[in-house]
Image 1 (cartoon, helix red, strand yellow):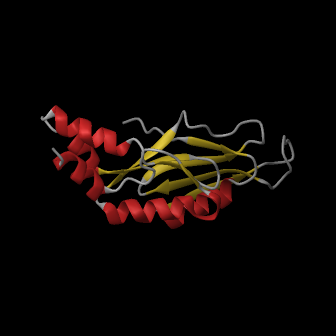
Image 2: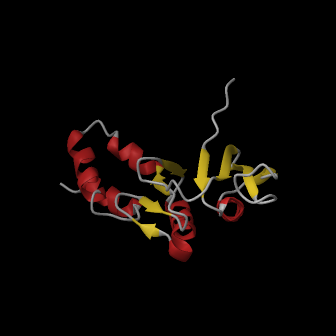
Length: 158
C-alpha cells in the first residue's frame, strides 16, 4: 500500500513545529531528523527534515527557506468525537499566536490551517430532513469554534 506523507515547508522552524504538534496530538513521535551538509544550500548541520507521526499519521517538516508560506488552500481536518475534543484541539492550536477563522477553521502559530470538526456536525449535515441540515449549515457559518450544542439546537428549531 502506498503511504501519502504531507511535507510541510517551513523557513527554519521544522523541528520546533514538529515538537509542538507532538504535544497536541496523542500517539505522536519523531521518527527521524536529517541535517544539511557542507553542500548547502543552507548552513551545514541545520535541520533539513523532521520525519514525525501525529496520531499515527506520517508527516515531514522541511526547513526549505522563506520562499513559501502556508495558505488556507490546504488544511488538515481533525475528526473530533465530542465538544471536549473540539475544545482541546482548538485551544492548543490557537495558543501562542494562532488565529481563529470561520466555520471551525483556524491557523496555528506557524500559519498552518486546521479544521476542527465534531463528528456530530457531519451527522447533522447528513440529516435526511433537508430543513434540519440547512438550519445546521446556517448556524455553523458565523461560528468560529464549532459548538455541538448550538448546532443541535439549530437542527431542532422549527
